[in-house]
Length: 76
Image (cartoon, rainbow, N blue to C red; front, side):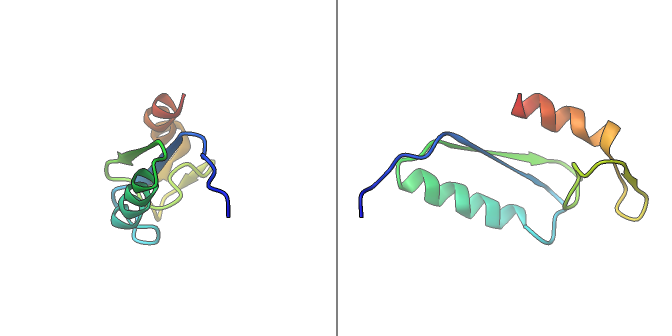
């Protein structure tokens, strides 16, 4: 198989995500880098899984209007 280059990737995760854990995302980023790909890791402190879902979830303590700006600042 021919090797191909992937576009740069930004991998984000909430520090309190227990579904897609920060450790699993860090491992993924490390593997991308080992293969020569450009990848950046960013962790949103105190946020659970799906912190960028629209609206508000009182059970998870997420609110798009509050949680999105730091993540979007990093992404944009």
